[in-house]
Length: 447
Ligand code: PMP
Image (cartoon, rainbow, N blue to C red):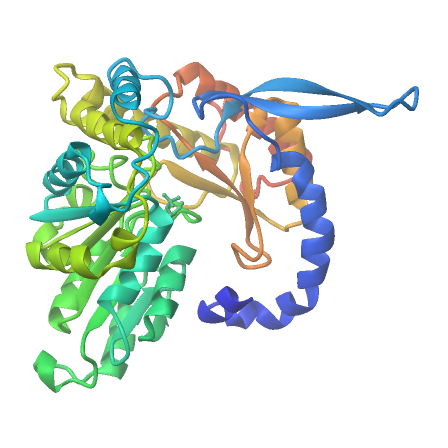
């Protein structure tokens, strides 16, 4: 509810607050039988979903385990690196043997291996910034870095659908927070205008500094950030741009360098570039890339660098290796193929869903595509039927979305084959008819 109040969705609150108890108690209890299950395989195109079946016909309450092989349309494994990879996996195993699963130390007291310094150099080069710092967790990157860079007297203007790690980091900073309508540059400008008078130099403004925080691809909407317009506005009003590329780095752009590359934005115009390694790179951790001074400052002042154990060496090696593959430095063209495939797969899947009559959010090239269910009561039937037909999808509802904007969030990977996608479409179409979520007339099939 706290998070809810900070978003610009409070308009829905009167309806939601009364029903919150109902939803958490009844609806989520029912949804749990669909996606609260453990998985016993890598998050590849197909996964093993574990189901515990109680066989109490003879009142013995014996429980057996049943494994269903499901097509995975819910993972952030955008480039397929999270599964066994001919280049990355042997190197990660080798690192595990040579180093260990953990450095058992913070970066400043023995937790900096040669892999950590190599990783920071490679990340900076990859995203197109002079320097980078890495952290053990993407969530912590936002929530621990924002309070170091911002404070009382500062102003954070945040997209209304920014991730919870950003919301928490912004709150923890003590800065004043304003929210602008999701991905709407004109509203951002209106908020900025309200806060400062146009044309005044930075030192004459009521704010010590201003951050505008946006995401490259919005994970619940599948939308690309309107970055060129947002950057232009920030330049005009002398605000810093903080860009979270958790879902876009590695996944979009000709060479996987994210939304700046895709939308033709100069990385010099984005002051603070944040991203995670948990999606396209199939590893864990997060990074901040920016000027040398910024990174130097974070290395001295950020508690998550000073007091938290550094990224596990095999995880660091996995990121280094996957970046090499993406850039073709492994000596193969697999990286370019993966990038072409995720784009092709995403655009094919999105257009086929639309032809079937589903309402699909998001933009072309985005591997994230929410199918609107609207009524949250449709979630249990949708996810249960999908699972019954061996399809693993993630459904999202209040409070992660407004109450009446429930959705199934599909994530496409380069590791999906065309057959996988056709199978997924066939099942979603059947379940869509059953649950009644084809809100548009279907396009007639070409003979
Ligand atoms: N930022 C965004 C936009 C995210 O979607 C997420 C998680 N999906 C995070 C940060 C946190 O990253 P991680 O899961 O790597 O901790």
